[in-house]
Amino acid sequence: MMKKYFSILFFLPLLLAVSCHKSDDGKEPEPVPEPKEYETEPFTVKAVKIGGEDLNLTFLAGDVIEISNPQILFEPAVLVSENCAGQKEAVFSGELKVKPDAVLTSDTRLSAVLKNGENYNGGKPFSDVVELSSLSDADRYCYWSCGDFAYNQGGVNLSFEQSTVFVEFNIPFVGAKASLKYGMAYFSDVISGNRFFAVPSGTSLEISNLDFKCDFSGKEKSFYKITASMPEGCLPALFSIGEDRQVFFSKGNLQYRPMDGAWRLAENQYESCLEYMQEVGDDYSDWMGEDKWTDYFLWGAWIEGGKPYSTNRLDYVAPVDGNGNLDGVCAFGSQWTVLSYDEFVYLLEKRPDASKKNGGALVNGLLGRIFLPDDWIDPEGVKPFVGEFDVKYEKDIPNRYSIEEWKIMESSGAVFLPSIGELFGTFCLGGSGSSNSVYSTSTYVADTERGRKIYFLTTSNLYAEYDVDFAYPVRLIQNLEPNIKAE
Image (cartoon, rainbow, N blue to C red; front, side, top):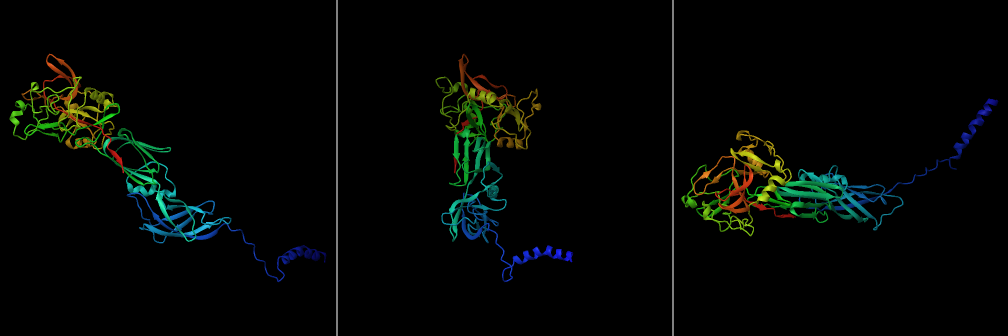
């Protein structure tokens, strides 16, 4: 009996505990609800995308709008649209998860970001400077947003603005030194051709040698075109001829037709009007009335008032300034001139890597000297240029180009001065095919018993003093003018 008694006593507290949880009518009590993390509110947005030229201004399949305010909302709300693809404006709907201690009123401020998987930079502001292969990559760097708008129970109308700026460069020559800066983000390069960049709004651009600066603001527009122009008849690259001074070379040697006084530039740099040992009558009298051209001139005979048809050095004396240097406007155009002696020295000896940017060459079998632009990169399709070499024979010169290869070099701005000899007074062309040809500079040296002494550029020894005895070819240049704009 004792064992049974203690067993009942052992289970009695458990039975009493169970009976105490029941109500008086014997029903189980209602469970106590847990506190809510948020309340839901339906929300609708009518949205439109606005932005710059050439950007995708219609909505894409999969676009969603993310609404945020961490003080009011439990988590960002994602609003979706049933049919926004291809539309300029669309309705997005969803629910706002409101914190239990918060209330949505007309004073509540919210922000919105457009998101779409990998597009639109993941819904985060873009803060770098990145080059694009084309504008088709633009969506990856877009940041469509609408910040700080007021809540309205019936829904709101939102305009999404683009804060990433897209920049297209259209620079038709080699040598524009551009830098893009945004905070710690920085890009610097020599820009040429068509190139595209994505940059944050507020990025600054400077093209130092074109004296150009601007700031890109996504609030004004999100697409900018930076365009520059170059002089007609020039090769597409810049050459330094002094500190902070760059020029373009003409596409070919200067040429003149005695028949009617017409001027032109040689279509190809390896051209020459005269053939070796070709006879030329005094004042080209045997060419009058014929469609023949010359590219040989006495010193200064290509300026206005000169006698470019003359082959006799005694028939024309070039005008000079107070220092004796060539003075006058080029008859081919006032914007053209020739380099001085000092400018040639700087080009060939003093600019950075000067020795690597000039050297002997054969183009289409014609001997001469090549000058490369300041910012040269050996183009694909040709062998790398050799600036310094020591050979005894013409056949061993390493820089050799067919017409097709030379077109590639020339499209990158390479200059070729052919060694086409000189014109001996009123007699004939001599020295064609030799290792030397003399090109005019604008620099006077001194008067001697034999006459005026002038500095000339030679294609073999680079530069030397020559008496004004013969007619020589002329290669013109134009100064760099900062013809650049942003639009």
